[in-house]
Amino acid sequence: MTYIEKEKKLIMQTYNRNKLLIAKGKGSILYDNEGNSYLDLVGSIATCSVGYANPEVNAAIKEQADRIITTTNLFYTEPQIELAEKLNQITKLDQSFFTNSGAEANETAIKLARKHTKKKGIISTIGGFHGRTLGALSATGKPRYTEPFKPLIQGFSHIPFGNADALKREITNDTAAFIVEPIQGESGIIVPEHDYLNKVREICDQKDILLILDEVQTGNGRTGKYFCYQHNKILPDILTTAKGLANGIPIGATLAKCEVANSFEKGDHASTFGGNPLACQAALTTINYIEKNNLMENAEKNGKNAMRLLQELNKVQEVRGKGLMIGAQIEEDASIIVEKCLEKKLIVNKCADNVLRMLPALTITEDELKKGINILGEALK
Ligand SMILES: Cc1ncc(COP(=O)(O)O)c(C=O)c1O
Image (cartoon, rainbow, N blue to C red; front, side, top):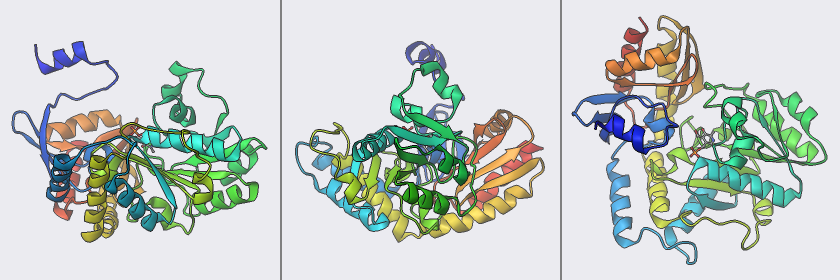
């Protein structure tokens, strides 16, 4: 049996995979089992923030694994406390709760918002993506993902993204929070007007509801600031992140201001693996690596150059993004181009019918980006 046949027999068929069997990675290069190398502009969908097999992160993981991987949360561990301190320094949000994925980080945020406000309503956006567990899915505004699993959790409603007036109209006496991505990722890299988050913050304050920012995809240095909201002069009440936080080791984090976080009491929420020393040490080392090597500045500069080069390509209708979170809208079905690129040993991703998404490691070089965009240009011809 081939690995493709075996996978079909043994794994639930929820993924549309291409045929590569990935064996290893280094920097922005992935290798298949036959030793072919591929330039990866997707960074395992924004999880590989400081490159595959990053020597500093891997050394920290190995060292931590030799000491202890997990003890559950019955005890204190240093990496968890240090990571919370680091995230507090970056955001000025007071407290963290650690989980293992983006969906769980959002579940935590939704529970916290309901507990704090004693209200049920959660407003989110059409096209917004917040994960596949039932709470996060209820917030997700993509019928393709939600319809088969109805009835979802009560109290969720969806408004157009980028429209602050729509938020104002949707808020009722029972609204607890508004959850939104600063840039919609899964829906095709949709960037709102710059002052959207400022307006949203103002409305949430006026109407006394919580603002939850989902920075699972936009966070961790990708857009040129550690968190995307830092391009605006606002602070959310609750912030969620995951993906690139620990360079691929599973972790999720929910951060909140003290007055909100304090609403969680002993026993209200828990996670067996959440905040384990291995993931937290990996996250700490990843954040330090990003800061020490000016990767946020690189993301901003390289992202701008990449977007300019993409705009010049034939058949590219529009280029959207911030830093190294980039979408190129094309005329045809993006999956055809993804396949053609793969034949040319380049990995790009389709995230809406006709949008090619790029979320490379923040360590990608200018030359690698140029090379990738040249190959993409060939594939588009
Ligand atoms: C904005 C956003 N939120 C939440 C999630 C869910 O994260 P996870 O797949 O780690 O549960 C994703 C994943 O793509 C995401 O992009």
